[in-house]
Length: 293
Image 1 (spheres, one colour):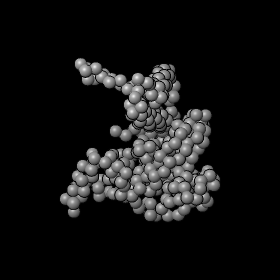
Image 2: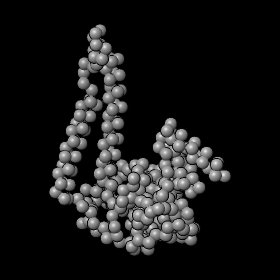
Image 3: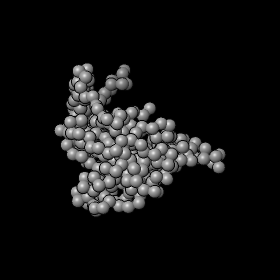
Image 4: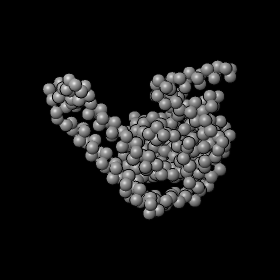
């Protein structure tokens, strides 16, 4: 049996090098049976403890149940392909996020495979994989339960929306507040329940948005260059220097790329100045979230 498991893990690792990222939750996937949630009782984060003018606060919680409390492996929550927490029974956590579209994914590991959750787009159990739009100043509640559905549907979502059905749903405050107040904060608890939630991920959000936009513009630039070459706006290289040549007109995407890079540079300089002044520190009565290695 062990030999078979090792063979599967080896195949997964090899496949990941060809098809995409290997998702492993080793040291992070322990369920409530192994690591009961023991943090402080739920309390809302005060508005003056997060940037409620420019960002949003997103809560994740899981009502208690006998089934969930006997769980050995808890599913992992990802935002834009970054893993933050395994959502255990009777637990809650939160993330401060920048506005804009976010991809929320939840994968369930297999304990016998040391937390193996999937390779690339493939997952042994993908509970949810959907985009949601984050608006500045808003507070959101994600509810996970395999036992029963929310007491009421979210009126802001269509019935066929991926976040309005299944075990992980985006619920209203009225629905969430009746359950989340009974939960406890999911602390970072090595060696089986490491997590990096309960913190701000705004800078990571902005980095991800920048990388996505740059990739989009790079692809657009390649298309524009191909069209310029086809239309004759192209200079051939000199016979004595094979590395010359190129377009005789500048692409619109290249102009946008330069502007994007300049905007990013200015933002990083401003951020560095702010950090040097000691601004942007976070307070949280139950301990700060810790980054994963």
